[in-house]
Image (cartoon, rainbow, N blue to C red; front, side, top):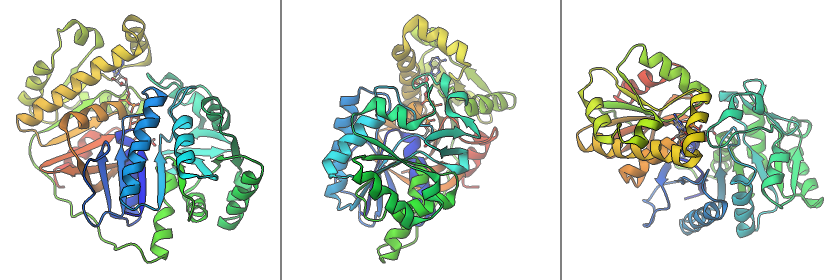
Amino acid sequence: MLLGCIGDDFTGSSDLANTLAKQGMRVTQYSGVPTAPAEAGVEAGVVALKSRTIAPQEAIAQSLKALEWLQAQGCRQFLFKYCSTFDSTPEGNIGPVAAALAERLDAWKVIVCPVFPATGRTLFEGHLFVNGKLLSESGMQDHPLTPMTDPDIRRWLARQTEMPVGHVSMAAVRRGAEAISAAFEAEHSAGRRLLVTDAIADADLMEIGAAAAGLPLITGGSGIAMGLPENFRREGLLAGGGYDWQGSDGPCVVLSGSCSIATRGQVAYHKARHPALQITVDDVIAGTTTAEGVADWLLAQEGLPLAYATAEPAVVRAAQETYGRARAASAIEDLFAEVTRLVVARGATRIIAAGGETSGAVVEALDLDALAIGPEIAPGAPALAAGPLRLTLKSGNFGDETFFETAAKILGGA
Ligand SMILES: Nc1ncnc2c1ncn2[C@@H]1O[C@H](COP(=O)(O)OP(=O)(O)O)[C@@H](O)[C@H]1O
Ligand SMILES: O=C(O)[C@@H](O)C(=O)COP(=O)(O)O
């Protein structure tokens, strides 16, 4: 294994695995830190954690454990993957985890770059934009767990960690890999260690990737991985070839716990055309909606059934005010976890999950050790395979409104 990756959620990890696979690396995604050594032939290992919104100390502990396993597999470079919208709170967990990994790896020039141009995430003068809007005006300010109210990534990161934050501007990035390396060096000389790096296009990420050759630790969204495989290829270290994808035509269900704008559009589109069951926090907590009931309903439907807790920000806020943010979230996540266990036990072979936390609950419920990476369904969202199961873990804001239909077809082998 050459490149060791730690993802702070399950959708984000599959997004990263997709990028690395498209750039020609043999990738496996692991659910949590494996207990056994990796199988032979894996060039990039992505350890998916569900550490985005847990307590910072716990996120650090899990990330260091993942790092130790990846080191034991022989990795020579490490990547900490977080969200392209920098999903975190003023306490963390991006800053605390990045700082802990940097300390452990003795890394002094640590790139911080959430940019993902294919999904509209760009960074200019340290400010993050989503489809041309400042992060804090993009809808992310209403996220149920990590409301992003400041678009200045340098300022947000500096609230999370005492490790000095620097900046590499677009002016340097546009001059190419050598200039970027020189800018990293200048920041390092000035005592700055977490280097927020501007980029607005794939070409920028390729240059940053080239400048990252040999750096022990890189952090960012999946875009920052684009240029890394080429460094290994140049050294003759990549074998080429990938996973031979085959679909499954078994029963397919869609489970959506994401309340992000793109998912809300997908749910609206889907429920106008397919059977759809709305799940509310009130009903789950009152016990009037049960996992058994939802599973029964899903498996009794024709077409492509959807169970969704997806709701508008005002509805989410009301549930959080009544039950607290954590209780509302875990009520929905625990329900989807149990629904997943039940539908798979009863024969479902295709699962489409929407939302990072939701997908984490779904995959953890299935106790899957390793996921193989199949074709891309939408930018950042690949098809995945584990034994007879075919699944996709869709980040909240990825995919067009037909995503669930398209995913079902690709998981089916189309
Ligand atoms: N109706 C709702 N009210 C309150 N919280 C909700 C509701 N529906 C879903 N949630 C919670 O919101 C969170 C959404 O996060 P996530 O699944 O990561 O989606 P995204 O990828 O869009 O961020 C989950 O913890 C989920 O359980
Ligand atoms: O980088 C991204 O945007 C995604 O890979 C990701 O991490 C999204 O997280 P969720 O929206 O919470 O699924």
